[in-house]
Image (cartoon, rainbow, N blue to C red):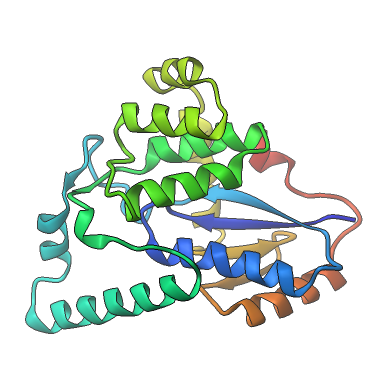
Length: 225
């Protein structure tokens, strides 16, 4: 029986890209487990306007003091190191906009409906963190959609309308109501969870524990409807 792991994450969260790669590493450490990752939306800062904001200004507001700047620089260096270990080419200097990630989450939702959720996540992470593209921009999202095999014209029309806006918001609210305040978070059976970009070894232990306790039915219909 397939073990379904819900990964709650944001597309502008660098730790989430590291966490995704480490989860894949955990799956490789447990080849006998049949694991499927279901990606779920979470906006770390839903107050960002639809058009995004200047990245440097945003970071200055978040890390204004010298002490905070030092901590931010240390975190960036650590992310670059971890990224190299996981084959992730972080290029933070290329980022000029801090986008609103809501529409990118809508794109992931549509991609997941076509079994392309993981491809969408990887493509969006690469676009933002390696190429510095504005993944809040509709044209960028349409280009990414075409790259992973979705119909770009359909995605363009969907983005221009209200398709799945309410469902995506409801899904985010559900996870906040479950007590999730930071990402990445990995959930099994809506009962067992691990938060943070933990090592592949620790996530492998999580998968084994979850597999031993998995229910007879898949309790995820509401999140995917």
